Length: 278
Image 1 (cartoon, rainbow, N blue to C red):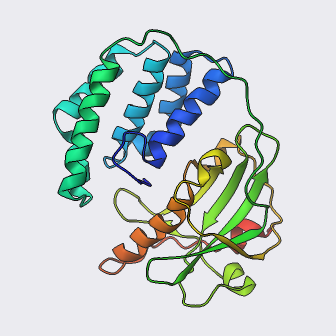
Image 2: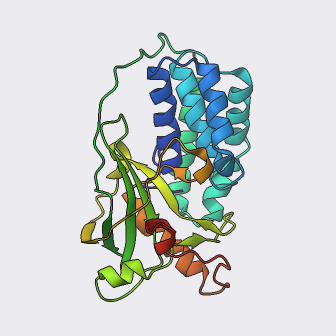
């Protein structure tokens, strides 16, 4: 869960679910069908107590804007806010008291807004065609707070679509020198085991529209040859959707910090497994 503010929409999960909802809405799908599809496809988020509230907030806001807010969903969101469940998450994630107070005000305002029927349903919009931000095989590098370099490999670039998708694999690169081609090819994919994650490889589809949220300095260090083709419609790959530039730094930071007092994940996956044909 990449979070950059106290607003309801200031996190990756909310932004991605809200965007996915209206992408389908603009394709002509009905609200009930969209809602069921998003719930079915995001069970990992819904099973994460630190992130599930953001999903329900996004879905409720989208339904409300379409003048079709389901009463059961409204009751769920109302309970989350009135019982302080979401504030408990912020406490658990060590948010400071000032931000928690801001969050409470925002939550109360959000509940007040969706408790009043919207005058007019949001109109469906014409699609905008986007290009991916990176080319297939680009090896991205960025710096953590301690000055070390991290790395990620672009496994795929889907052009001329509404999303401009890049499939990006985060690596375990964490070193003082800017990574080389050999560093990327010999690295392991980052596997998450902190929080509610259970040895989950961090490989996901990134939407060009929402990638640059944190103004993170990202460089293309080198390029590698990716021999495998990846299809975003292939559900068998189980790659997640969502994330932003903030995600690239935040997730490895949390994982490496977790490993200071816990074992490294038992699952080991090499970058070569995802770029070279067997």
